[in-house]
Length: 388
Length: 133
Image (tube, rainbow over all chains, first blue to last red; front, side, top):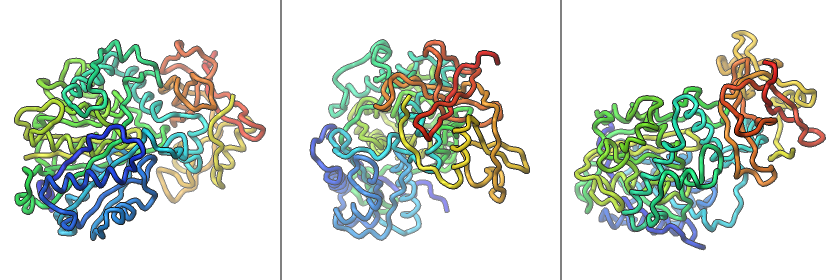
């Protein structure tokens, strides 16, 4: 079955909230779902597919979050998915939804996400949110790695192998902060930063400083998808899912790739092949940026620069508007919005860029957008290519 | 040193924890192919039908990567160093690096295992610079 372009995104809404004291994440989800449906000219009664993964810390749901959210909304979807592989879960949902829509299993699918980590009162059950102190995790948790430190160990190795510098890492944060300056909703849009600011911010887990890390926000978003045919009856200009790829790789740190290859090395080629496009065709990219090292490895694995050269690529200004690959045009997770699993928000920004509605910097006449997300510390990944 | 997280051992992992209390570091090996694997499982990664055997390693390795953690677990004194060590026998292992000033750490340096008691019944394998490699 040829899946390219069979499904379209007809609603894409990101909550302007960044700080929502005492607002339950389910309430934010419903706000976003409603707004995304209004965009599309659809109603809740049209929705027969639902994708949520809201069982993680500060997301408000339990292990059966898809039934909880369907109940909270008051719908009984005939098709649903609650795949949870961390931050890229919602890109996986969009890929799964594209398949379901092409197969006739669902007509209108809602994908939604929200989290409220800024006020969430319950403690996370373990120190590393991805690992339990039983089974495989018993061999790692006693050494007290933090989530940030696991990314930091990739960055440290990258610096050793390729001569990547802290200044190059910092340039990622500086560039996306520049984009956030144009976005009225960006959490850190009002204050520009320099490379020196990043290097002078406190060290969290070497080589990553505080400003190498994403913001922590309350917020969420929702996407509405339907078939290519039905999309033309909707109120918005359809944005088509032209290609996608998904991959898992590992969880425990000891299983990390010796070559620092992430699952993006498999998701990118799959997505490009389905779309019939190459990296050179991409007008704008949204690259998951939990930490500055995160999008850098994606640039290499997705084929935008040779392996080991992401530091130079970033420092040369390629990610800025006017560069070869304008990226994270809303300010990304580093400067705009990162409630915990940013993938859906990156997808929304990809859609906004193709519609010409980017709230930050807008790439003129963008026709091909790439959205790349990962989950855990490069444990899983998903890439989606959007076209008009 | 205090260490975060009491762990839940199980039938498969018990021999590994027991060996640590005797100052021995074990990994697993496929008795047919000879391939070493870490972390421990009930099966061999290169052949699901074969049960791995425990084998004591030299405790020598090189530093594969690390991070000096300044904002870490509240029960540990910051900074502390998490490290991935490439064991001489092949596998990568997450541990901590002890006994070195943080500005003297270099990836690729020779390290060797040391055992630290975290409580009366638990010993953990950490790594220190190897003085006479």
